[in-house]
Image (tube, rainbow, N blue to C red; front, side):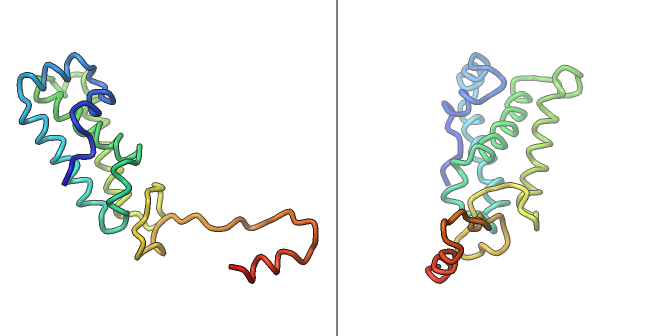
Length: 148
């Protein structure tokens, strides 16, 4: 499986800053690449039973979850202290992202608008037809309904 974010796309989205990202990649390129692929695989394992796994890697919500989880892992790799008050935001964002992934995977009401799998569209968020129209004649709506 291809990671949702490459190093360059993660660096562009990361809240750590490009300098720290480059420094981490120079020191531990294998760990950075492994973290990007592991987090992508974990998210995919959670979401693939309901959502279209070919489309959600481009979804900004999924990319944000991936960024937040990878940012925290890379923060720990660089020697950050998540128990300090200033640095706790990375941990909070990662925990929130993991909780939202679990919520998206288990949600019955479809709280996140991710692309659904084609074979199970009845269980997620779908976009229906408009419930009203503004036709000139009061009878053209029946012709349109027959056409569906």
